[in-house]
Image 1 (tube, rainbow over the protein chains, first blue to last red):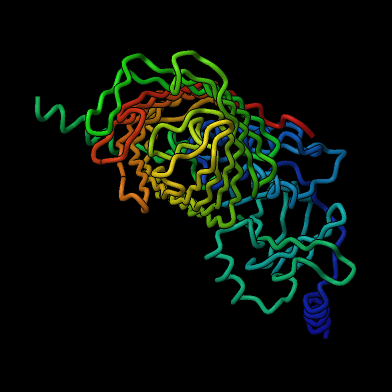
Image 2 (image 1 turned 180 degrees about the vertical axis):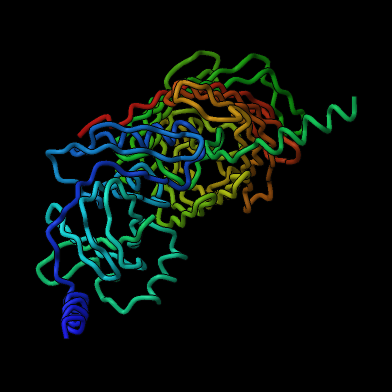
Length: 178
Length: 276
């Protein structure tokens, strides 16, 4: 009976996507940009990213067109703004991995993590407990290649994957363990 | 020797990467938004004689062309140019202004490739005498132009096609003569490679790029046309300064032009996040 109750509560939790308070802290992100061909392009992108108020510092790997973004603790991170800045520079996000510090956070498929008024919806993960620094890959449109997005769209029935929104939530990001 | 040369070519081909900061044309990509670019373009040509077309330019000619570029947002950018030269008269004097706008309407990006399309329009006002059949909105003619740019970046090649239509009108104080063309078509095929550095380490590393472009114009009403080949080299310094050196040489054509051969030297400085 106890097992049944636990299973039922997990199922309901999954179905209704109830948010969980976060035992996590977003510390940094690894940004992969596509379309960069010269150091002037990379530099322009870095200059655009530097205007974001929540970014503390940026490390660059020009050779691989990737950026390490370190976030300020006191200002909420707006992940969509990272994408806009890359697009303002004339390029596109090929991948974004955000790094959280977790404290005993139990996750599974369709688990919702609430963090800084945003929801992070876990996809394609096995039930597990996260501890320490963990990297999550954003799976929303514009954060992965169009090809992968179309493939993943077929894998989920969740309408929030298409819209990025839920009732009473202005933004749901879809993530998987990187 | 031959083995060494083959080895060098193979090594070079392996390390070459695409580049699309073309010297004689614009790519479909835009400048970053809120960026201001300042350019000083200089065009020079030597004496040129063509007895059939009644052209006999004995002196050296020089055109100075300062340019301000503005990246408005990810879709729009504009260029404003001023021109001064001694190309249509013996003295050096201000001659023209032009405004160019480009709208990027398609961008399909993937990790090592992108495909972009843009539309452009240009308007120019010149006070020069109209002496040649070429419609040149970079100083010689008043008029307007519009066209399309398609740029494809594959891992190692950035190839771009430009096609456009140009219309000439009377210059300020100088009218088009009866036989001079009122419209023309222009097209260009551009290829660019990033030759150095082999491995990027920092923004202060100079970039060295090489380009080859085919530049053509035709005046359908008169049947005159030309095609130029235009090789160029480019150095990018501190990831914000650019120096271009290019040459144009006609490879076929019958159009009455000021010269079939010219050189271009350009200095460019970019100010990123120039305004809020």
